[in-house]
Length: 367
Image (cartoon, rainbow, N blue to C red; front, side):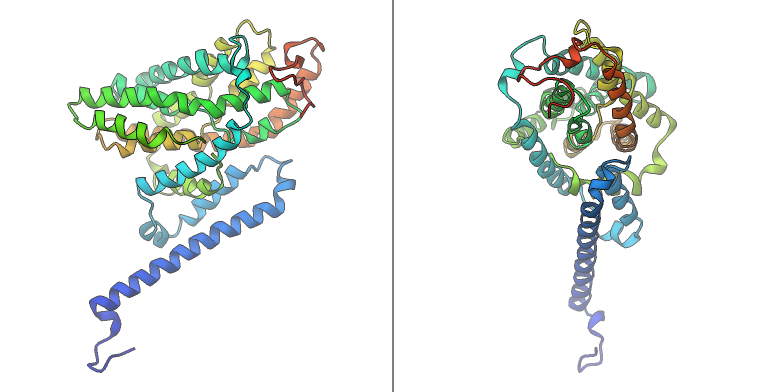
């Protein structure tokens, strides 16, 4: 359309601004419509998908990756750290609230119970072993940066592990222990993360270290908890679209170690003396997925803007670990439950797996 003077509206500064704003609005609506479409399609097939290896996190991450293939979406609708932080926090609040609301205080009163072991010995050893492996695998991290990475990837994810904790084929005592661990360990990891950030900042003579600690404590103490649907698209976008080519052999190796050695060895040590079978120890050690909690803690670190030398390495290691966890734990959930159910089915009825837990529930099948 032309104005009286013959100049095109799109050529004026106001016209160009309006056109750009309208185009961004259209792209945003397309992105929202795409997300709603994926939710709708998944809701129609969710019951059937429950019996397959295609979990919701896998599908939503794949949807985010496919939508990110559009250059326009990447350039115009890119989420900055604060925007993604807000979305991730909202998801974390929703999920962890639903999980922690089902946790009775009496479940944490006995030092002999499984959640206490996982949240104390298991958690501390996971952070320490994660930092040690980071120092061995990466040559450009300080001990404090390695501690940051260990603390970020220590918490397990309640959303990614939902298929495990909801399965009646897994003993109630084991399900409850994994659920309590996932619901509480992200909060327990925060003090360690903030300590390592503050020390790393002070070591680097960066004056922002103390402000990071104070600001984050004020912002986060009111939060409770995580549901992972909305973050799935953003996660796929963030993890795959622009950085997968940057995943070096060292980054992939650390991701594998994080999901295996760094997780499974501390769990095995924490469960010593409980009498649980080897199958149970392996099952609990393997199914410690990393997801939204690690993304939120990683964003806390990046939002602090410390500009530490190893920042890029930490970022890529977190992304690779979460992405690998979504795929690996999703694909092995159903087969893992099948094999574990067969293994514990052959155990003596008096085995610890079949004992009543702290809330009076018995083993498998007592949903």
